[in-house]
Image (cartoon, rainbow, N blue to C red; front, side, top):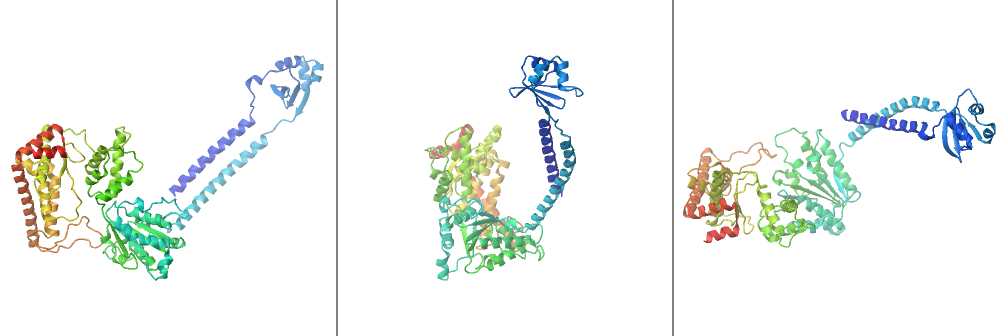
Length: 609
């Protein structure tokens, strides 16, 4: 109602503005538009007649208009009771000159009728306009109510939004995923080849993987390769406040898709409606469950010759309802992994297209420094490098811009305004030097590429370590060494200052997490090869309200002891390494105090010396 009133007020104001403009124009037309120098007195007009400057006079009521060669040159008023000839003679005009004039008499123009009509019609027009606006608003509200259950899917191609024409060439890496999904493209291009031999193409393809790995991009690439219409909708767009709307939108989406087949229906973030049912929350009329049921029914109703492929993506396949994942619905599940080093090089090249780059840009070095980056992270990295170059008023993006943007993406921007005291600076320098030295002299650790005590993000300093090669499997020795490296800063402070600061809180948190995983999940402790359950990041994920503890209180106490044992061992290893290399620790710290940043080459030279 508030929206209708607002629109009505806006329309009425617009109407009055238009009306004022029309009245102003009418008044301008009806008014005397003569120039000031054309208005003369009667005596001046008589002088002009005597000097034969006028050859025609037009009389309109009491107005006298004088012309010469059909051009209006003067205008005046006469007395209404006296004729024109008598008036001119009275002012001294000779009778012969009056006869020589071309005299014309016209009726006076009467605007009273038009003014009367405007006074009568304007209120009537205003009333009609107001009622018309009200009916239009009411009609629009009714149409919106009728469209409430319509699907909000965006159609690309075939009369819909312009397609971006994305193909597999625009999707870097993901070789296995593209091979898996090529069959879908071939089916959409030539479905008869499969149907003749009796082959059943998967009705649904589920794309899973970490955020930013390119699930939506790969789905659009399938549409671009096949050249078919592409319906895109998010799982959350099915859900509304009112029960039954979601299932209605599902029906409308699939009915629309059947008219455009062969086509692709893509549901992003499927877990928004596809979470496991029967979680104990909500009754049988739960809107999300009704929507999920309708999706199951629609996909189950596909005939063998139906040329609709349903693609869906989610970051949490573990919480999806089992009915969605059975054969006949989402038959094929494709996992999109984080890109490896070679794939990261390809991704960097794609996102660097159109950007002016210096010749010193080395994609291989950038890829080596970005393990664990997703495709979206790499796209952000390239963009940040371009922003840094533009901020420095460079015309091209160089390698130094890429390397700086890596640190910005990982840790945050430099806090140049953050001024540390000498004591804080010394503590931070010892802390970061401790991390670096423990990492350099323990086996199965990553090489140190940079040490800095320049504040970035929430960190007062940082030690950048990058793995030489990608690794998806970690051994126990690697995890134990990593825990010792994390405690290197804590132990360095304790060794030098005989006390510790609050700067090690993040290191302690991460080391404790590693220790708990070693004991409870990986079976690498004295408790044996038993999985005691991992720690859930979310309390409620659609399966149960809480996690049932699978072990006794006595076992829990033993687990705590094993975790403490790992932490203690890591602390002893880090302390022993730092005591043995105490002189090097002081040397690296002093270098950090002087330069604030130590690069890999300089640091390795100090270690060799």
